[in-house]
Length: 112
Image 1 (spheres, rainbow, N blue to C red):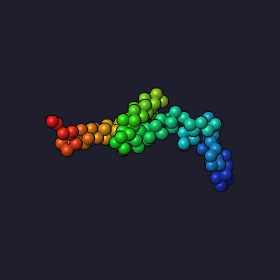
Image 2: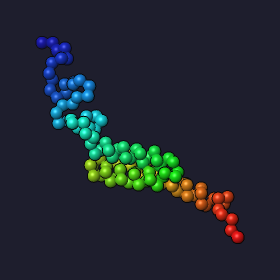
Image 3: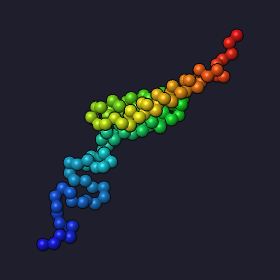
């Protein structure tokens, strides 16, 4: 008996694009009803925190979002890599901004 790939072979059977087997999670972290999973929402929060961390004035907001994402990752027991990257980036930008704006001699107000 020759198989041409169209036979049913169990759960690994390919479905049309956008469809998943019942009870499975799609690659974009949505369930069968199309609702985003907590991991997907946490990932968006972590990426937003990283992006905001690249802008010095928005770095404190990015740090808070990264901390929220870290808590979300731990809640769903996922690896918090993006949240940790966001915390590091935001902390470095925040410290760099403070040094640049307040501690450099040219930026200090003239004392009298």
